Length: 119
Image (cartoon, rainbow, N blue to C red; front, side, top):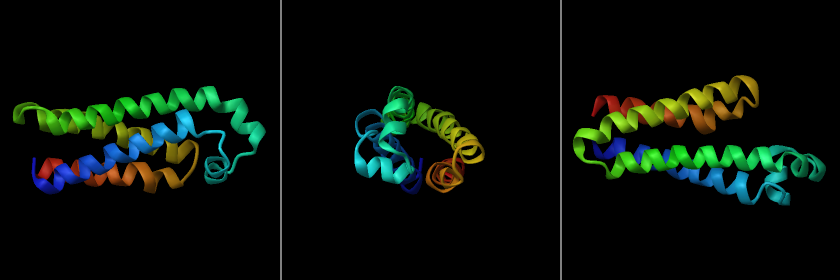
């Protein structure tokens, strides 16, 4: 993969590590609630679901990090698979949950995927 592709893959992985932290550990904190527009009650009621979602984001990040550490023959297909997963999740989230997810999750994954394909 090119340096640009690796940087974009790394940025997507870092974003998903950040999502993991928000959803698994900071879900009920005031700043996280404000970012997601939730009341304390709503955050408390959904914290188990959010933690589960955070765990899945961690798996996506792990796969992307694996693609950066994998031997050259595996790096590209692993990156394509996990970026496609992120892109699909971002598109689904953008259509069903919040339009912002298109910009925060789907767009970076799409850009990284194009960079990987072109490298």
